[in-house]
Amino acid sequence: MDDKHIDMVQATRAYAEKYLEVGLEQEISRARRYGRDLTLLVVVPRYPCPVEAPEKARVIGELTECARRITRNVDTGLSLPWGVLIVLPETNEEGAAVVEEKMRACAGELACRGPEGPCAVSLTTAVAVYPRDGLARRELLESLKTKLQGCTNGG
Image 1 (cartoon, rainbow, N blue to C red):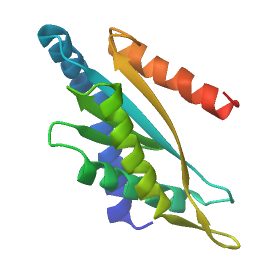
Image 2 (tube, one colour):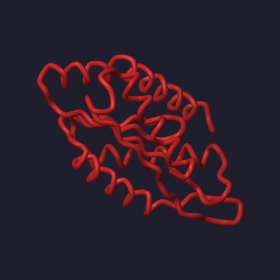
Image 3 (cartoon, one colour):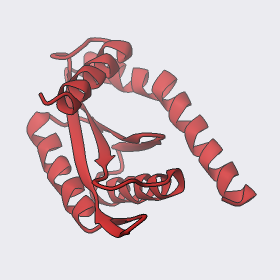
Image 4 (cartoon, rainbow, N blue to C red):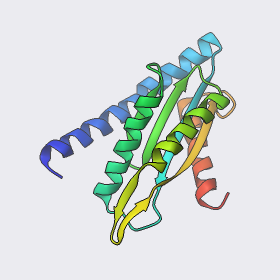
């Protein structure tokens, strides 16, 4: 990776961290104030072959771009080191399922480079809904984490 790409990755991570601290709390406050839906969808790529860190970063970047293309202007797609978090204000769980299916279609078009050639990318996903899964940022994020762990542990 060149210095320009490293700077971009660091800036993206800094934005994501700040959004998780401030922006997500603002969305929760707005949902609470106006009695509206708020759904979080996390998308984590899975690889059937060994994949190097730069290739994983490329796949996450492609999934983040996909999230930006398929969601509305009020939605936020955050690139995280291990996946993509999509914040869907005024969206219920059924609406999040539509976004999830579109993300799966994007992933189906991706291939990553493994040591023995290209391999397909699949997704593990989890959804957290305000207020069902939590009333605060930390609770919603913890709910996503727990659901993802259930998926990776055979749940």
